[in-house]
Length: 399
Image 1 (cartoon, rainbow, N blue to C red):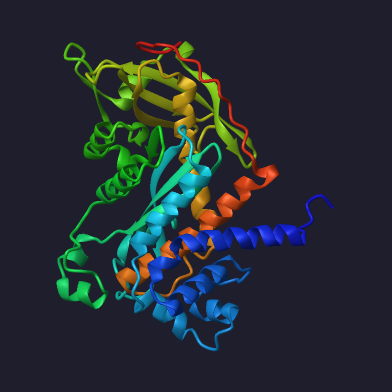
Image 2 (tube, helix red, strand yellow; image 1 turned 135 degrees about the vertical axis):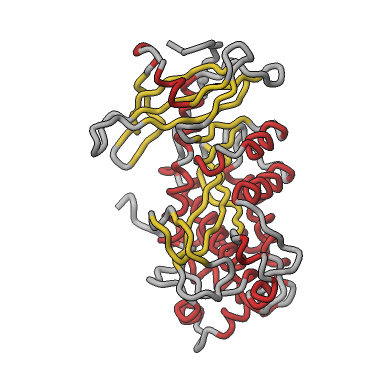
């Protein structure tokens, strides 16, 4: 059979994993944690139902999970340095100038009050307020593949204001409160300073509505398409004043709406009606601002066609199709979350400490990146990509 796995395939995959781990091996210093880290990653990649300490230990041939727990809780190694190597690995194998950097968060349901950062808070993963931890993640989506490249645990104010509790959970005294958009900025800054190639960034409303987050991207020269709420104030010219996003879109003429796909979904193209308005508000020469609207084709339970709103900033003349491509790229991080949780045990950890959380997540990201790169190098996994991006200028509503 054409899809049958051969011994040559297995040798190639093992060689690829050896090459990846060769990049990070020096980060573990001593031989024992180095070997244990490789066994941990191998366990995360193995067909084990629940990738907890016990199951990973069994997959590694250990009689107890002590070594795995020591790797996460007590061994001396810097997870941040491993993630730096991970970024370099992803750039080398999936790097592309048309890539999109994507920010989002995901929740990890937890019991009790001891796990670092845990409290009752809204989890988009659960769709409700739950006792959970929240991690902010950065994904890299290019025409060659997509994977998660960085992560940070969100610490609510109730945690950072209670230093004895922080110390008990292994949270360093120098770690202060940071909003989720601020954590995202830190990860984006590290990626950009490391030379990760990307033309665009995208994020959901929680980040898009933060003016400091948008200003950060502009100052770093990264174009963006970020979701905003319907009541987002859109700064127009002095003559026109400021307007709400939904008010501005309500005035769009019928011919402004265009039915286009923002990418392939599980059931085919993701089709929506889109409208684009030029925002006549100052920006640096050669750049432009827009308000992009996405309208669903199927009415919701109330019989309404739902509309999503995006603030955009990019090179003047960027076509509507390019902005739609970037808006649609945000789904890539959801796909990464699902794959990392299902395939590399992203949410299977049983640790409480701040450093242990980052260590497990880092090794899970390493395993997920390996799968993404391996798939990208397979002949059937080569993504189709259009090199044609026609440029046109636009003002007011684009019809």
